[in-house]
Amino acid sequence: MGSKPTGAAVILLACFLAAPPVDAQSGRAPTSRIGDELQGTSWQAESVDGKPVADPSSMTLEFLPGDQVRGQAGCNRYVGPFASRGDRVTLGILRASRAECPPAQAAMQKQLIDQLHGAARGEIVDGDLIFHGRHGEQIHFTRRR
Figure (cartoon, rainbow, N blue to C red):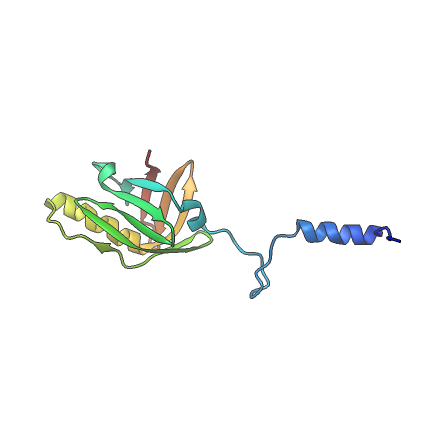
């Protein structure tokens, strides 16, 4: 005959089912990664370190499967690796095409790429993506339609 579970067994089972999953190696609950939220999304830069971007469609960032990014930086395209842990972000070496740009566009392109390399933390605020650098600089992106 089957036995009826005791109250203690029911409470133990409920606690087990309600507990968050645990990483087998660290013994801690895994933290969500901003990279998981960003995968498959596409953004355009509205401002780089407080300076408005004249043509946001020329400064883009797209998150691809396999922790890769690509985008447009002025008159050049770029691609490279992306990693995240919690809200911490790292963009690796971004390989860019080498088209000749007008001086103002080349300067904004360099600033965008440099600040993407220097990004340390990312957050989504009111539907916008903000990357924060180690020294207070920011890149503000809006979602591309």
